[in-house]
Image 1: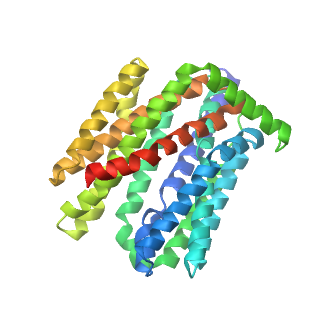
Image 2: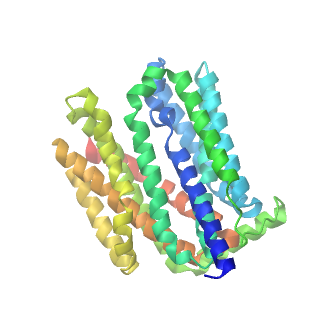
Image 3: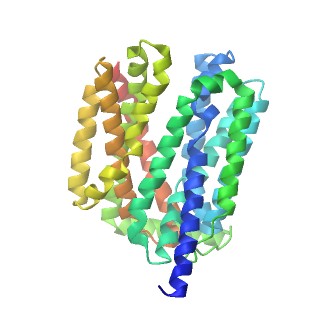
Length: 367
């Protein structure tokens, strides 16, 4: 193996390890995974908690596109560092909060942190491989990232009892420490050579917007992938969301609730096993198969028999994440580096827009 090629392989391996550590830090948030429960234990009403969740989603919706623009003009590493700093600040604000004002502020900052990470992580992962001619390995590595995130998030859910026992202040300080570990992972990353940091200027922002709009206007295939993937993802996400309530009602032993919810998240962690096969199909066929599968899971999830509920939730997560991985790989192969994070943010925004009308419809389906 030539010396330069060996050096590039070592550099890519280090980059992958740092990205996987970052994925763990984003997923493993003991307090963040049960924040509703912690607020309820502090004495806040369900109305106040509902308003807090609304604050998170409104801020997230408003910041989705601007966060992608920032990643394209300032660079991936800087944006990811800002993301982890936001999550650190959010945890500290929640630990210091005494009333709902502090809770609202914490969740708004948390939403901005997740927005800055969303799209940027996919962009730096793909471009790290693109610059060494290894973009063909992106789907497999993306599956690893997805698995690490899903299993770390599930692990945080399994520790829900311990998190409550620690107390909400200590739990959020633990989340802050994990965000520091995430910042350390970002500092170990290298900015891909193909990323041009143009600076936060009106000209750079306008150029990025024009380039993204030009692709959306001319690349019908990319737009169709975004729409289909967002629709399937919204249906699967809402199925799993409402399924949690049915599982909670079906579990007769309280100690088994955590493991049952962990099983619901296993499907996403195993999506890499299916994504390779789906990627070899025409996209329309892959989307049809997964979409029909999610529809069947939604119908099965209306029952009350616990094994069927768990199986349907696991299958919905498996199908949803597998299609997401395939869609992500195909979209990244069509996106130019100069607008990659912005266009990924557009895809995430479409998902959020589908969630708005579908949420009440699924609420009626599961009521």
